[in-house]
Image (cartoon, rainbow, N blue to C red):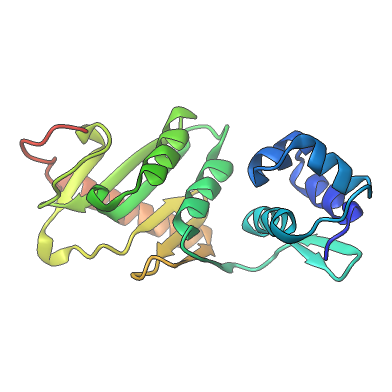
Length: 210
């Protein structure tokens, strides 16, 4: 159980207004206001949404009074919506950053859901550049093919990795968990490898962007 005081403190750590929390947790602004002011207790789905939003953004609750920023370099997002939550973290991490870019390795647009496409669009529409490495046998592209390069099928495995900011995220092959590592040196190293592949890999052949 979390208190309104903890929620307000968590918002302060992230420099969020109540409107931002309501949007991220998909709750009514009045609901957030009432919870924070002690008029109602955060329970059930509302409490789970609030907790998940804060945990995904690096905040932890301590007992029934404390709140702190997570200092862990390794985190795991679990659940069938883990990749969508990762894409939201990409957006939150890079929003407003100069020359912001997310690099996606071993993607397969053919299996992307409508929600995943919309989440990618949300990132791109915020001015965040996205580039993708996919299989040379890819059959679908959700964005301009100039943003894709292909790699030989024998070197391709659909276990998506995303490099953004100082973070590296890897989607489990079963698609139900994402490991996020915060490590600037590892992120920079993978950017270098991505660029090396990008400069040598061919563009998609004879396929139109969807």
